[in-house]
Image 1 (spheres, one colour):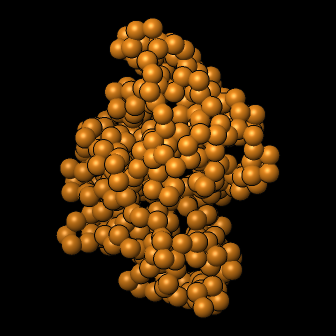
Image 2 (cartoon, one colour):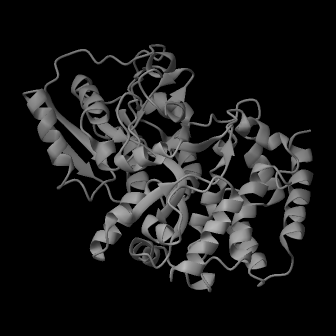
Length: 438
């Protein structure tokens, strides 16, 4: 998760290399909605994975179950430490295993060169979540191996000591809760992870709270997203208010992501805005520190639309069948087994890609608070416009630089106040937006 944006940055350059030097295509019928997976499920397949930590531990257990279901098969795992870099090179050679994770370097319009189509989106959408990132011209080329939700990771023991046992429903209630943590416990109420920076980008992942499926199309059409009542004012405004009220760590310049995990796990800090992916990491940190992993909980962003919380969910890594595989029947059977039967998503506390499978316990508790999980569709009418405005305005909406400045202003380390800072953001965004959307 930490490196997601770094992978995307790498991918922009690598995509060009693939376009110029691709030799991996295997030909075949480009018009078919699904690959040819006929034949007996038998023989050996090679599965490429970035989970080098699981190659000799968890993954062989899944393979053993698959081989028992399909006698005569054998699954061999190839762990790749520098996955996106190395597997992108393998794609150009044409030799990249039978089943693999899709490298971020591969553009969506290149999927048909390397991966077998699994069916149409219309056929598969009733069974699977997170299809959009793997769908091109109506065909699905990969399946997500699990998804994450957006929200606050908290130490519920500390919040309970402050007298709060249910998620706050408004930013005002949330701030009051943090104030109670400060007054009634020894914990730092909120931890920004300012120095590492990337956790500040999490403040840009909560448009779903508005309950508007068209929000990503509407966003670039809005010239002033930091006006009161708009999503950026809501999210960034809460971060500003937390820091301004001295409810975050005293010295943000010394924060440290790795150190922050045992701090939250043991109750020295109470709250961080992250994704559900962070829950098992905090629980592991609790076990390592001799604390109770059950203290870790996941709460929604404190805002309700129509009397209900909404939380964005999206898929993580995508699994695909190599178009060059000599054993596509077994490769497809493994991908289906891994997504539907292995238990991998549940074991990782991720949202299962199969719609009919139950959520992991931490997310069951999350939805029990009244949260509706939402896959917010990407922009279509205004596709690409937001990135153009970001570039034109030089406001790194998806990053951390301007939010670090926000924290500096809020804590008095830089000139300005909330109104002047947001007015400047609106001015720069509006000027860029008028040029891009004309």
